[in-house]
Length: 498
Image (cartoon, rainbow, N blue to C red; front, side, top):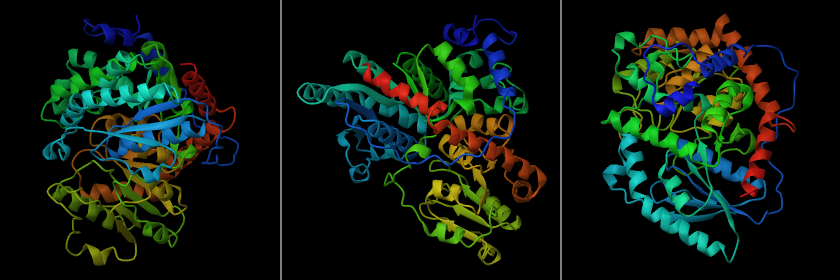
């Protein structure tokens, strides 16, 4: 019996040997060998516009920056394949239609209170959206389907996996639903395994056992099991259970990854979820991310990078959701300064807990880093990672950031905070071998040593070579006949068949 089938039914046995699915995953992981590839041209980021197919696709993004960007990239990709695009969106974090010419936009009321919209508890926010959006979403989609009878037929609905209620709505309206997973496939296996891991007691182990391996999910350790800081851990478990159920009931899963990076995990999902899986990434290599309007890009950092030596700069960004305390901020700042390496640091307003604006640097630091540091509120990350001066990336390991770094051949320092970031970091360090991980309490001396190791020492050089290998793979998969190229063709055909 396959491991993932046991998860679906709820395993009751205690200690079990690795199942066939685990062995396939292990075999696939160990098959990822570093070997030279022939040089190839960088894939064009544009796509030739095709004639409209007379079919419309409705997309509904989760209204948070890291989830919206991939959804809009997917929308642009499908638009370039000839489909018309309609976007249903909440009033909360509403996108700017001016950034997406050719799309139609349909706002719905999300019913969020000001306190709910500003909540740092993401699980609570997700649960509220999955309740309060049901009626307005169903009414809007029903009206769009009615209008389409006289205009352009709607082929399908594509929603973020976290918006699990949309599967029930789609079923009631007899509209095929596909799911976009904005994280990677390997982390999906981890959240699908949570019922079994919970039953076996992994979710309640003491901190002293956090380094223990999880044989059911190689190469993860106990501390890598997805979790979110929430006032209600049971809510997180229930949310992930509903997400997986909704994915399995859908007409297909779209993922921003590529076969050469995650082939073992993709094979397991295809077999055990019993739905089509379309690995068509990396999205940003097909269609560059357009500005969501939620954060203003500071492009002065590109001018600063132009003055730096090749591969000399450490880029530091922890995404738009991670929050650190004032002590951690100070240790990070002094660690960067003491590394004696040039760095570009994104410090967005609110990144430090309790701070509403940009947090000031510790006393005495500004003069110390003068001339070799540049600090911005938000950066054009794709451009930064592609810049010749960028030699390393200190990241929270959200999937967008991790994939963008891999695709530009930039090795990483991993500082995961929540959810899939934990498993992403483990794959970066232990499977793909393109990064170092900061463990435990942040301490300036350890930070400085890790930065020097990545940027200057032999270990960092070897990681940079492996990262270049995956960069080449990412470019090849998008060429005609490549894995993502063929998967995108299959996705277009799949949608057209509805």
